[in-house]
Amino acid sequence: MKAAVFNQFGGAEIMEIKRVPVPNLEKNQIRIKVMAAGLQPVDVKIRSGFFKDMVIDSPQLLGNEFSGIVVEVGSDVISVSKGDHVIGWTTLSAHAEYVVINANQVVKKPSHMSWEEAGALSASGQTALMALDGIHISNGDTLLIHAAAGGVGTMAVQLARSRGIKVIGTSSEANHDYLRRLGAIPIKYGDDLVDNVKKLVPEGVDAALDAAGPEALYASIKLVSSNDRIITTASRHLIEKTGVKTVVGERTQARLYQLTQLVEEGLLQVYVRKAFDLEDAVEAHREVETGHGHGKVVFTINQ
Ligand SMILES: NC(=O)c1ccc[n+]([C@@H]2O[C@H](COP(=O)([O-])OP(=O)(O)OC[C@H]3O[C@@H](n4cnc5c(N)ncnc54)[C@H](OP(=O)(O)O)[C@@H]3O)[C@@H](O)[C@H]2O)c1
Image 1 (cartoon, protein in one colour):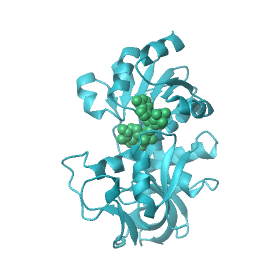
Image 2 (tube, protein in one colour):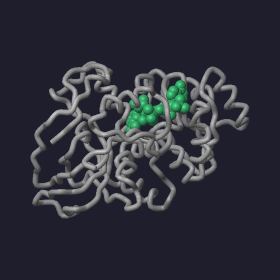
Image 3 (cartoon, protein in one colour):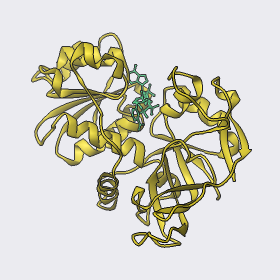
Image 4 (cartoon, rainbow, N blue to C red):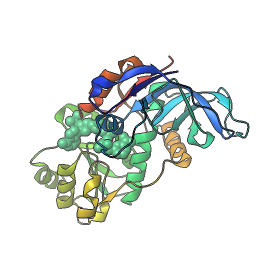
């Protein structure tokens, strides 16, 4: 099968298409023809060598989320059938024509979602859901979300709004209309952020999600009274020093199902910023590496 791979750490230009073996199928597993797969910051970080001690394969595949069609089921599998349209997660293997995973790593795809939208739901969706649960937000709270227009932020804004939370979201001005459409009150990130948030919500913010980086984390510490109501997906190296939380826990089928139910109810939507063919992996990696723009970057595969 075709896969987007790299052989040693480096820039986006090292991504190439190679033919690799389709993985074997165990009794409790399913084989899926991938139709679309999201590209996350973690994929480009792995490729760049950001995780210094990480041992990689040669060739190394990437990709943790996908949508696709079940083409084969193991003999012990009863929950999924050949031909099902599914959304799922995997570990560093989705940017390829086929994935083989345990049958409990997929849920049914809502029929109105495009393959691309569905292929980009799991990672940011599950992360955002875990983040909101980690800071115990509830109806009536005001939540500050940094990088609100990004993959995680887009999900977190909508999930919080669906729970009756007032959301202040940071982005560049280019994404302010987008944030308003999601239901957030937009605010520009930068030097004056803390003062501007205080002016915007004199009553204060109850909790914060940092999906942007250390500056955003330290701004949150100045704005939220208790550090255990601040959670970061972008500054994990600072959690011990600051006492804020980070997202911990595994991806689960129950959580992914919860996300698809919200999609069915019209409370959650995946926004695809740009879709690339697998052959254009170099450009796709460069797009994510800009660190700007709204929604998700996705590969279209087998279509
Ligand atoms: N995606 C996941 O499932 C996941 C899981 C765990 C951890 N994480 C981590 O969480 C972080 C966010 O991930 P993501 O997928 O949301 O990334 P992303 O989609 O690439 O985020 C891009 C967003 O960041 C915003 N941004 C850039 N600089 C900013 C700043 N200084 N202040 C505030 N916002 C800024 C951009 O807004 P403008 O375009 O308006 O500048 C853009 O909308 C990353 O560090 C990632 O590794 C992600």
